[in-house]
Image (cartoon, rainbow, N blue to C red):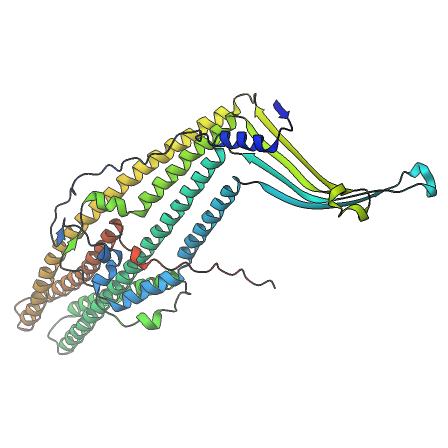
Length: 488
């Protein structure tokens, strides 16, 4: 049921009254950002170069420069300019900005221009009947006054959504820089592992040739030759998988830069060492990381938007005040239409409508939106906890992987000594060939694990920088919208 009241009071008094009503505070809850609860210090032990010292904003914003790898820096710069997912995030910001403008337009009147020419003859008068004429031209305006703040709350929600989109853009950027670096480290790791396997393969080929010559001289039996052969082929079998890993990493890097797979093969074909982490890394305190993390900012802004939407829903409980009016020219023939003294016309129609019965639909919408607001509050709190967990895990992982790498280096040194000694002792006839095979297999295993660990250390540092919210220093300028494909 709708209740409508119309009147024609004086324009000045009406406008003053409506503007006074429009000054009312918006309905619905006023938003207050929830506190980001964080511990005073990190739980993980500060070791292996980690320091709880305050982070330098400039260094954290472009953390990849600390790895001192020009190729990696160039790849990140190109990815920021060409990555398709980042361009989508930029387009979403433009969309949110435009939608905010749509909501802001609701505070202002709408004005339409129109013209009409009407000729009418009654069929009962026959051919001799007169023709009635009517001409009009003018402007029609409508205005819904935001008395209870529903439009203002919708603008507030749109503004928060815009800020959430901007935070999402930064989150995509930070994720992109980290993903480029991680795939680059993976590429170099696979290349180094393949080089290690190829070097061991060459050594094992020499051993196989040596055993074959001894077999021909009658100094060993065929068992030793077959043992050398399966050791050789086992190493050879690892190289195709490592080559597949190299190609997959290069293809992924190409896609991250908005290119077709394979377009970076020539540029990155030559192996290079894994980027070396800096000697010390400042990680600050948890509160700093939570302030920088764009995913937390996005979750907080989404909560603000859903809080404002509660007010939008509550505004439907109250009356709506509208003002309709027109001004223009009306005449019964075209010659008099432009005579302002006789053709001028105007009208003013204020109205009020109020939904006084809807079987509880409005209140249920309010309850539903309040539940949505609660969900986003819980999502915000979960995002904060996940952020703290991510940092703690990478702090521990980075330090512990460095300790593991140190042990693997010692193992590789010992395996190299053992492999050389086994060769000498076998030639001297003091040990059997099984000891040589074991030493060669162990050397390859430890060298491969060390190559993996070198990559994991740097990858853990990259993940730590990302978890701390670093990487916004590559923020691109606002690119133009993508052009739609031409019609065929």
